[in-house]
Amino acid sequence: MRFVDEAIIKVEAGDGGNGCVSFRREKYIPKGGPDGGDGGDGGHVFLVGDEGLNTLVDFRHKRLLRAERGQNGMSRQMYGRKGASLYVRVPVGTRVRDLDTDEVIGEILTEGQEMLVAQGGKHGLGNIHFKSSTNRAPRQATSGTPGERRNLCLELIVLADVGLLGMPNAGKSSLIAKMSHARPKVADYPFTTLYPNLGVVDMGQGCSFVIADIPGVIAGAAEGAGLGLQFLKHLSRTRLVLHLVDIAPMDERVNTVEEVRQLVSEVEKYGGDLADRERWLVLTKKDLLLDEEFWERKEKLLQELGWQGPVFAVSSVSGEGVDALAQALMQCLETRAVEEKSVADEASEAPYDPTQS
Image (cartoon, rainbow, N blue to C red; front, side, top):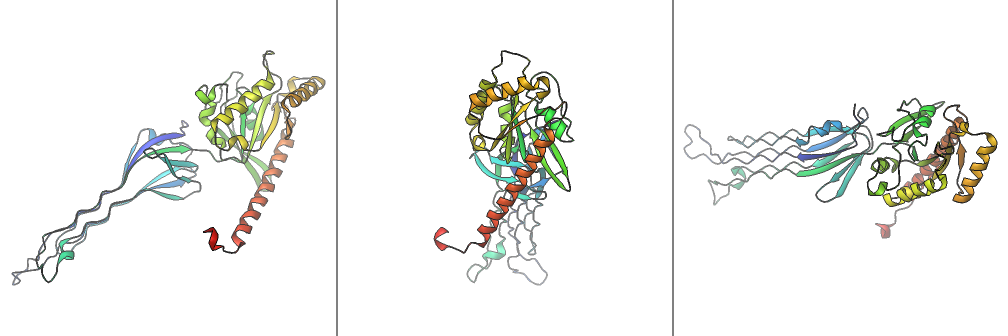
């Protein structure tokens, strides 16, 4: 199935049904009173999270989503039926944005989560509501109100604990294939990866984490070059970013330090808090160098970058360093989970302060 992470749709909630103007017509009752019923409410439009979906491709062909209109009121004080609401299933991780106001309405983050995106219209009143001592035969009723109409942009942002960031051919797909059961396309040319890949890294004893691989980022990505910047949003929900660097590029003219700085610059141009996310440096393709040459290149790279964070060296071919990296990631994620739970517990136990409301 084709991976589509963005779709534009139009949602229309159902209009409310109109009220009815009617009078009783019964034998031996020549002057019956008003008996027009109310209309029914229009149906709403909901988006519902579905973990079984992983793409928005269905919305490329079905762009108009419309809920049912409320039924009009009828005589004999019969009310119209409510319009059926429309429930649209979307992948977990979908962000919903109003195109007309550029407002982010919300995000679908869990299975079965429902989000109201278009409110149905209210029902109209029949003439039974306008009867009074001075108006015995009211001939007025109200129409139902229109349902909400919205133009929405759906953006699928994959949910992962760890994200892989790097230039084309940095070894991202090879690493995710080695660490998990994911089977992305791996080849020796740039931009082999055309869409994000997710892999679950099983650490045993019920412990696991999700890792995401996105297309490589190149210079000028902020101005639309390449594919990477289009998918950088998929790293926005990750807890940790692995910056992969090819320590043994095939082209000897490649300046590895400049490439790292270039990529950091593109991430900063992307905006948001992605540039501030914790980042680990992972040197790939270690097996292509002799130990002495590898250590020389590593020391030179770290010195010129002034790198102070964690550094790992791996070979996706031989598997060297991969298990150590996975263990370090699992330990970091577990520590963060404990810290986040502690913060959440402290917030829930804090006494109520009316000045903060």
